[in-house]
Amino acid sequence: MIAKKHMPHYMMVLPFMLLFAVFFLYPIASGFFYSFHDWNATTTTRFVGLDNYTRIIGSRDFKKAMWNLATYIVITVPLGILVAFCLALLVDSFKGTWSNIFRSAFFMPVVLPAFLAATVWRWIYTPNFGLLNMVLGWFGLPSLNFLNDTGSMLYALIAVDVWVSAGFNMVIILAGLKNIPTDVYEAARLDGASPLQQVRYVTVPMLYPVLFFVTTYGVISALQVFDVPWLLTGSSFASYGGRSNALMFPVMDMMGRGFGSLKFGQASAYGFILTAIIVLFTAAMFVFRKKGYDQ
Amino acid sequence: MTIEAAAEVPATRSIALTISPWAVLKWVVAICVAIVAVFPIWWMINVVFSEPGTPVSLNPRLYPTSLGAGFDKIMMIMRETDYLKAYYVSIAYSLLTIVGVLLIGSMAAFEFALFNFPGKRLMFAVVMLSLMVPTAVTIIPTYLLTADLGWLNTMQGLVVPGLASAFGLFMLIQFMKTLPREMLEAARLDGASHFQLYRYIALPLSKNALVTLAILTFMKTWGNFIWPLIVAPNPELYTVGQVVGLFNSPYSHQTVDVVMTANLLAALPPLVFFLIFQRKIVEGIAMSGSKG
Image (cartoon, rainbow over all chains, first blue to last red; front, side, top):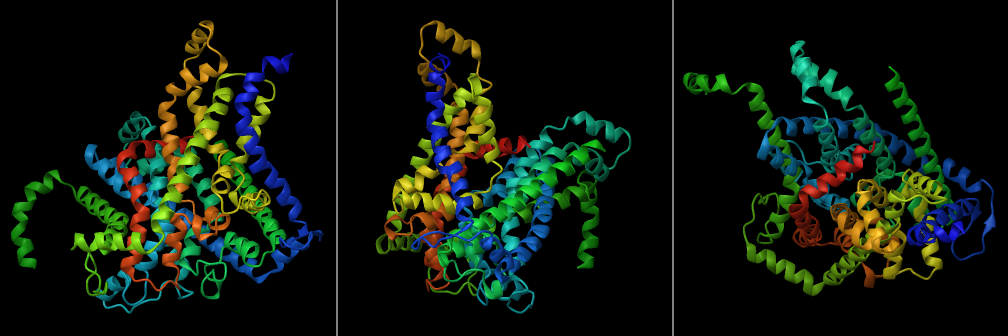
């Protein structure tokens, strides 16, 4: 009786929930199963317990990928958000048309697919005749091989990444800025706060939820970085990560184990290791946020 | 130099009263950043629309010099490579994904936003939790499932696994919550069926949110690199992203002109979309952030 009364509701959510169950919930469950099995798409599956997990964690590629990831995140996320924050303040300080023009210009890189950003920058970084080396040449500096020198590769990636993500975060922060009532600034000004103090004591605290969001979102997407380092290095399952794996990242390592060496059990386990890291991080962020509010 | 500067002082003094050094600095910084943001895209256009041959170090391509050469390159790529086919695949992939995401997402959002039924809270909670699960976990098992279904190198393999978009559902629910319930009630009293309420009231009233979601879905699908890479490795079903990847791979031995033409053609649809729907795109992204 109840089921019949609610039938129309269930019929309407059925397509979504069915696809969601088949292409989201089931893969999580099957991935969990594969992660404890040795399976290479041709032989029969064999239960190996935690072997996949220990093999990954013990491998040199994993350590290298994690080290790269940590360095990358520690630099990219704060730098990206700082740039985005400054750009948002900058756009906000202009009036009318100019504000729109600058916003559009700063936002433009976001519109490009990440694969394009990577491929365009690859040419800008080209040794000898690349655009960036040409500019260095103007200042009498020697030509650098940005994408093949282990010292500069990571920074080359970070530059592309900030170039792409700054506009995205800027738009979100701008929306937050618009929500801050002007009388708060008015009050701060009357109390004698300098523009810099207004930013420090009004804008930042009022933007706390927005900054929290862009940081969390930024770290979660940075943890899964793939397209750009993939295309800045060999861009094939036979060759990726660049010289001495200086641009090797966990998702690349995972995809390589799956599609390069056909170790799908290991690749599945890799996914769960990454998820565990993301869940731990998100939980830590929320604890941190609560503390921030309590203060 | 110093003499010139000194001579200019009286002239600039009156302006200096109205223009503070901060304002000048602000403009300089804004213009510099705008150049950094836009120049790589501008440069890509210039490389395409200039005579081939001169190395970039001699001619940095700061502005386009030959429109004809650009169109020649585009025609050459269309004729001699499978770019046109990839375009067709990418457009089909994007359009089918948009239609699917909008249709099943709006149907489910209609129920979640406006009605109560047993199990709703649980379903909603599970879907929202999935927003936290990274694609990295699901991509390999989803690929294996798609392979089991025999969908590798097929259009349905590209499209169907991505249709149940939790983000799209969330966005539509947020919007549909604001629909006027009195209107639905009135239509029901007039004898409209449940499906008619959705089709003739909720859907037309949600046009704004649907358009925004369609644009964001287009951007995401057009730019999706990793999923087509593994699910459709057959050249018959290459997307624009994969073709661009091939042109750019270190072993492709293509000249910068050809590569940038391939890049520009891939960038064109999102750039045109951006110019037309700029406000919607920005609003959509800002909205996704305001839930934080």
